[in-house]
Image 1: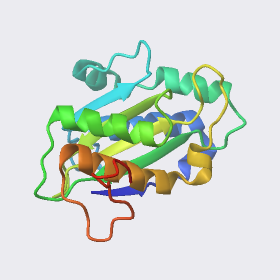
Image 2: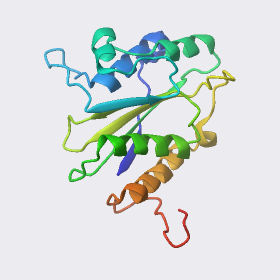
Image 3: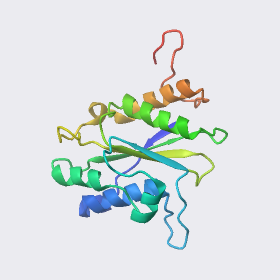
Length: 189
């Protein structure tokens, strides 16, 4: 598996709320970038700590995006220039996780980044030869309204640890140059 922290869109600086809507819409519907292309729905999707937001397929189709609570938190918290962080994790081309494994991978990823209490959304895309999951994490804590620095700024390192934990937990083949390997005898990375 690989992990990548996605770059922030330039559109965020103009309107953070529009950026959030567009990013969430992309993750949940896998909308293609070319206008002439059709929208390819995400293979599966899910969320954590989203309260009352309807995560049903019909809500996605009808609304186009599901970001009301996330947008609300962004509007309340202006101290952070970029409260949403976007990651992508990808499985090898021969690996085909189940929907339950996607949900478990998402939970492990959030836990390893120390973001289990935060609002997060994922969508699994199949528009490449590798199944991959886009994850959006709202760094604004829903109760304290403080913007959290993921793993004290070492979020990419935490992402690589999360990948090692997912590979071990779900018996996936690890990449040749993995930064971390779970040691089964010592029960740690």
